[in-house]
Amino acid sequence: MFPQIFIRCCLTACLLIAGFAGGAGHAQTQFLPVLTAEAPTDATTDAAELPKAIRIDYNANVICYGDSVQLKAIYDEYGPISRLRCDWFYNGQKFEADSNQTRIVFSPSSNNIRIWFALYDDNLLVGSDTMMLYVTDAPTGYTMQHDTICRGDEATVGVAGDVGGSAGSYWAWSTTGTTQFINDRPLVSTDYPVQFSQYPIKEYGYKNHCYSTDTAHVEVLTEPDVTITGDSTVCVGNNTVVELGGASDILWSDGSTDAVYHVNNLQSDLILQVRVTDRFGCRGVRKWQIKAVERPQGEIGASRDTLNLGEEVSVWIAYTNADSTVWFNQAEEDTLSFYPKQSMDIYADLYIGLHSGGCTNRIYKHLQVENNLKVHFPTGFKIDGVSREYKPIGIIESNKSYYFAIFNRNGMRLFETRDLNVGWDGKYKGEWVHPGVYVYYYKETYDRFTTEVNGTITVVK
Image (cartoon, rainbow, N blue to C red; front, side):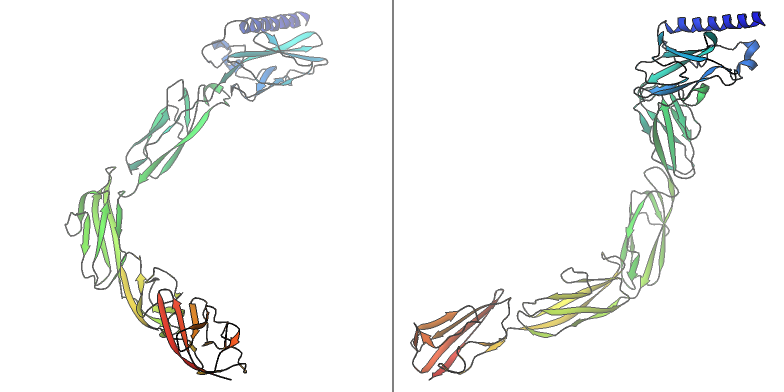
């Protein structure tokens, strides 16, 4: 029993010394899948695939600069250890860790770091393990997109940039591809996510936590990418046009080859077919359907057909089989209120389909606007009588401006005001005027329209 334990300890010590010597050498310039200190030989391949009783467990062996790695010493399969001590080392330096610390978190600042640990029971070395830790920057490349293809064609997508630089050196595509560029023949529009790194991502047993991701998109056309513009709804008997955009090698069902197709005197529903080639070289058939409908009908109602200048009028539309309406002033409500300034014919357009054309009908309504006064003037005024003031009697509107004045028979102005709430009290310069005949003058203005009137009143005492 003693010789076996002695030989085992000697072999373990030799491995540990070899690990120290490896760490003191120059940094490796190639990343290799060195995961343990014991490289299997042909004779021991099957045995080497079994997990070692004492080994390093890690969450990653490839990380980005600034990240941390978690390391753990595994010894459960070895057997009970009465007085455990675990020492950690990296590139010839010892970690500042307490005894019995079997888990550590390490944030390296350089690349190609050899890490190992030694496990002791009291002062007896019972085992060790070593690993390589690779630290790098995530590549900055991006996917090149073959944006649009015809169904059945081959698409090529890849990571743009220099291999070993911005594009990385290893790639893992969602299609299981592992090269910088891949080819595929998708039947539908497809996204192609990819991970790329300076180190292996899924191969060779690496646990790579430092990689970039991006997605390429391939749009698969099931029909030619050609725009068709025109009316889809047209009044019976009307003409219309349908126009193609981005098309070549045009052939309509009637044999015409023009990008603009004319439909004259439409009488029934129509389906147009055209065979075209788009800018991607996709060739196929596109269709355009036109529905023939009866012209929309309606009429305009109004709160009053005849109104005085300055009055507000409300108008509305009653219609059938129309999708939308537009008034003469481009308003699109069913009801409209405004102040007409003169007699006018107002109109509204009824639409089925788009406002640009298709099927429309214009309906009219006549509004009669008269410049009539809404005030009247008493023919007499008794000084200091029941009515203390003489002024126009009637409706005063806020949207109009007013002027009212009183003159004697010689044309001398005795009173004036622009506020019809204020009237003439029968005085001039504080004295009662003499009984007799006097002249009034009245003017009201709305916008640029003016109405004037004058007359006489008899003043009595």
